Every structure is written in C-alpha cells, then in structure tokens.
Image 1 (cartoon, rainbow, N blue to C red):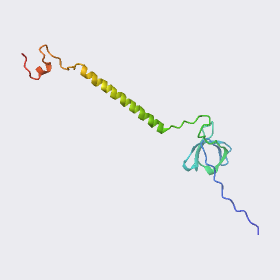
Image 2: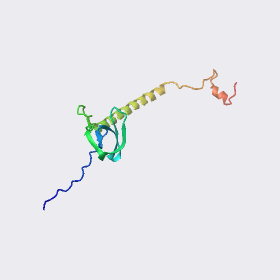
Image 3: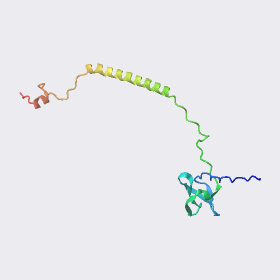
Image 4: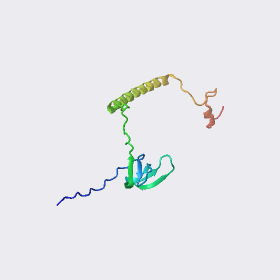
Length: 143
C-alpha cells in the first residue's frame, strides 16, 4: 500500500507592513500597503504615483512582491548614553545642601550682628515735638 502525502496546512501569509509592495488576486498592478488593520487580516492598498486605492483587502489574497525591511531599533553609529551613578548624584546633592545651609547660617549671623548696630527705622515720621503722626491720628491731642 502506497503512503500518500498528507496535504500540508496552507501557509499563513507573512504579517504585512506599511510600505510592502503586493499584487492582489490576479491583478498585474503592483500596489503599496498604506494601512494594516488590527490583526493584520486586512490592508488598504494604493498604486504608487496614481490616486487608485483599494480598501480592506484580505491579506490571504495578496502576493508579496517586495518586502520592506523591518525598522531598526538602534543606530550603531551613535554612542550609547552613559550610565548615571545615582548614589554619587545623591551624595553630591547632600553635600551641596549642607554647604548652602552653612552659608545661610553665616548670612543670618551677619544680619543679626548688624541689626544691633543699625538704628531702627521708624515707619511713622515724628513731628518736631517727638510725637509720631500716628499717635495724633489715633486720638492723641495736640498741644
């Protein structure tokens, strides 16, 4: 008894990508994929250079003529970004914070020392008799 080859399952078409060149069905025209619908079962096609489009064409009826290469995820010509040592950065932040606090404490000490030496500034001008104009306004009687 001769063994028969079992019919292999039909190959699933490759996942279409925007930019792939295809021929739908028995067409002789080469179309370009403009859009791939969710799941990759349907695509929108356009003839390059002509305003001729086909919408929601099933991918199982397409013959791929030219595949667009997948997009590269990294550029070999660029240098990778340096890694940041977070412990070193946190240490530097703490050092700068301490220096700033010391500087502020010194400035406050200087201001306190100078505050005792300077005369107080009165916001209410005094009259020649020594009474402030504000006292008169509040009900003080003038002589």
